[in-house]
Image (cartoon, rainbow, N blue to C red; front, side):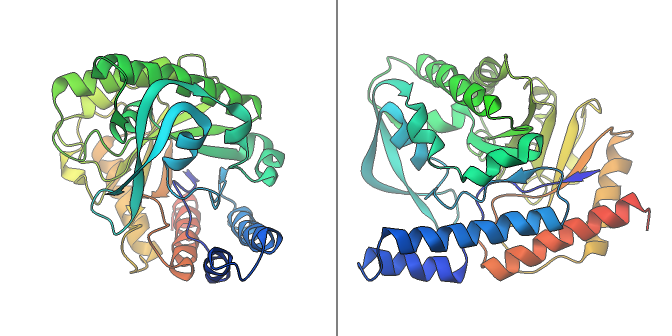
Length: 320
């Protein structure tokens, strides 16, 4: 029985105000950095207090899941076009692929708080899956989709190996695009090939998370991804549609809604988790997780959901 966060965390009100003040030149870089570190310290401390299995970086340096890789990968440029992040009220700048991607490691590492590396094997990092990163971009370089996706897979392998060298215990790859709408079979196979290329040399735990994705009818294919934990958004995928799940893989039960400010009761989370186990049989490992990033919520609501996750895990472990 485990629990941990997925995706970006919401900023504190103090950090939001500070960022606006920095934009308007009311405060300087040092003052903004102090606010950012204070918010990160609060987030790390809460995860540790709640005894999460893995402690993730709150990603307060990340404007969205894509932007750091525009900055850190040569060959990608940030375009002027603002694109809606799925059906949420948030946006990202669609990258333009103008050359073969090449990772600049020193640029990427600046997006993580130094405290993360002190956590050793309890540290968790979150990355876009190669198919998703390519799909989020505007390709003006590669002759075809397959060569583009597989090229991104090779570079994301370098990224993952770099982060593994820092001692992290889990790397989560986020794949929100593949099952957001009904995919072509060729796209599913390409996403599998790319993911398995990216993760083939990793020794740490690998999680693949499908926020916003409806996995109905695709579970046999999902099992072909070389991840030891599969994260399911159970607000997009119905439990009744979950079939053929390999119990040798762990399952991240995404049953706390990151897009709804209603705070779930821990008793409901416990009941739903037990329903998943009853449906799928003898699962070796389960994790209680949000269905997607909590960044869509006010900070105070996100923290209440984080506490609910911990309480649900405690009740499941004690069989209450």
